[in-house]
Image 1 (cartoon, rainbow, N blue to C red):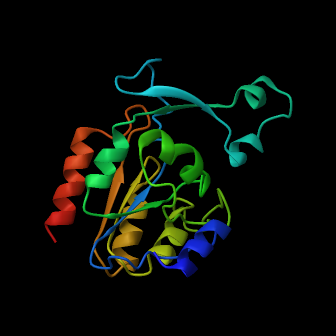
Image 2 (image 1 turned 90 degrees about the vertical axis):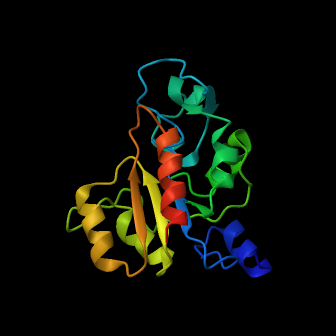
Length: 196
């Protein structure tokens, strides 16, 4: 990573990694894939509960309220970091946590603290065609590179849009927010990246 790109990352500017352009990107959401927030069981196997205070979430809580004081409950699995690092991808965050994923999520699961991230132009924007609000900015950020995108909110409409508007290979992996990333997802990601 160049000094220029690292500086851009620290300032929150979007940029593409240029270290291995032949490798696809793996664009990671936090809530759903890494944090199965909708899980019914209080103790998921392999997961640990953390109380974190991401600024986007805090801004929607009443100051002084119990949630504001306690922080957001987040389930994270420390085995996910090594598994993700072993995949043949360049990792990047595609989450509302943006750079806070580097600060709060990466150290807990064992990912590097300086992964690139998409600095969304507007969180939760309404798309005129009914796409998921992340889809258009994510495609612009990928800038023609092959990518796999892991998220819990991807729809069939988003998949069709990516097929029609992205010339490189793309894999969209919809992860259920009750289960998070599972072995089958890692197998699918590995197979897709190595079968180009």
